[in-house]
Amino acid sequence: MSAADAPRTSEGGGSSLAFEVDASFAAIDDANARIERFLGDSGVGATALYRVRLVVEELLTNVAKYAYDAQPGAVAVSVAAIPGGIRVVLSDAGRPFDPTTAPPPAIATSLDDAEIGGLGLLMVRKSTSSLTYSRTDGRNVVEAIVAA
Amino acid sequence: MQMTISELDGGVRSVHLAGRLDIAGVGAVETRFTIAVANFGGPVIVDLGAVDFLASMGIRMLVASAKAAKGRGGRVVLCRPQPAVAQSLRDTGIDSILPIADDEAAAAALLRG
Image 1: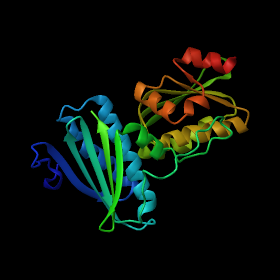
Image 2: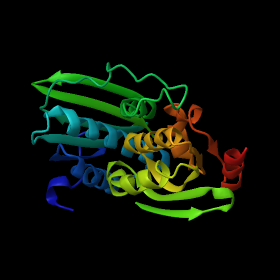
Image 3: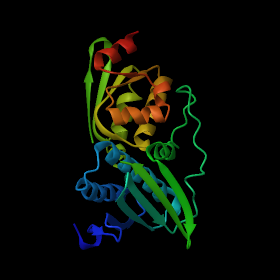
Image 4: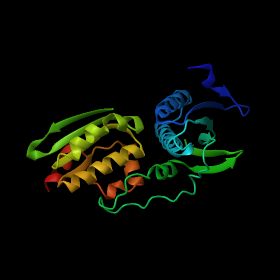
């Protein structure tokens, strides 16, 4: 573990993890591995860990696909254990995108109707107890809370 | 991410996936999976028993292959999803477009029925 992503104790007494990765598919595994190492020590249950991995996977996939129009860019990730859950905050300086208002895909009723893709944000919504977005200082800031 | 193929009685093929079906896992097996499932043209069981994580890219791969298989006269049944994976299949409505069986025998029965 590098010093850059060492867990630190926040003012509230809880611990948090913050780091930055490239907005690329290749960086997603690395981000989730760091988060898992951090949360693995904090007594978080398997279901919550799974949901955090899913939320990070899907939100980072979206950022990698769309935020920087395939140009290089970075995304800041922070994770904190909070009372009752885990807070994940992702922030990028790419094009404005609010995942909380993106229309959900139509649920297919037959294989023939099934659209291929577009399910990631639906899975994020199902996995979080709260999902909020703000555009702050030219950055997309998405806060997801996963219930413990 | 690992993938193995076995041929069962009655012309049923079983494709066994193991690992995380996330963006990296899909990248590792998608071409082989598509050939094994979509190009086969017969009944296929996709055994998810050892898949411990399923992201939307993984769902996309499963649905795309099942759809292509159907176009060639094949059929796909998913089998043995772990609880969190099964939850995602329900959350996304995939359970209403692809049959999901508890074990290989039940999956084979669905395909022969």
